[in-house]
Image 1 (cartoon, helix red, strand yellow):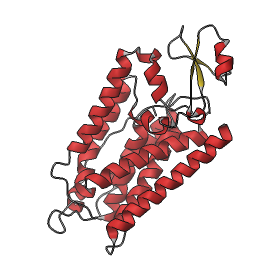
Image 2: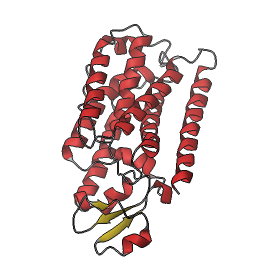
Image 3: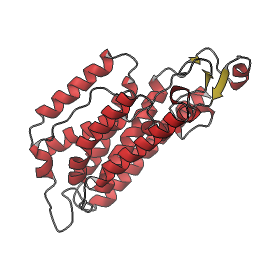
Length: 275
């Protein structure tokens, strides 16, 4: 999911929303993070590690990168022209007839892991740099407000929602990668949290608007991954902040489970259609 120019300025409402409601408990349930930077740092390290592995194994022509990126259906990649593939070749058998063809399975062929690994996969240094910079600014204040487990749930659900949206609305033979869907989900989380605590949400809306415009104006950008991630982030955050106080944690985690199950079912239906 090639990233837009994601940017962020932390409004005071995030700090206000993170005020301790009782000892070691956050305002929306769960334990407060003793160090709200740890999760973001861990995610950044994971992304950088995958990027480094792809660079060490061929960059644009890396078999690892091809296997981790999201392809709704399999692709026949060209070994002679790194980064290029044959869009008219739709099966491994056909790919074997191409002199420089190398078949890489897609989600519909059983490579289900791509629905998650694609969100940790980058090739261009500018791409990973922009996404990780956005995560560095967005992650800690959101974790401070939501708590570590709930922040991570929002991140992963946003990533997954972006991938499922790509499955449904992107060209089946396309290839999508990057953490931008998760980043858009974090922007959606920040927007809802700002509204919830009565903060000034105009800065968040401006940044969101800039990135949405850039998504549709830039070339090679996955609008499906971006908007799917945004919707996923909004939905996951709504479950957190609007859950009633009574049995709040149970309701939140059941909500996450239900939302995740819905995404799995949507992915499964699309896989059956493409298979």
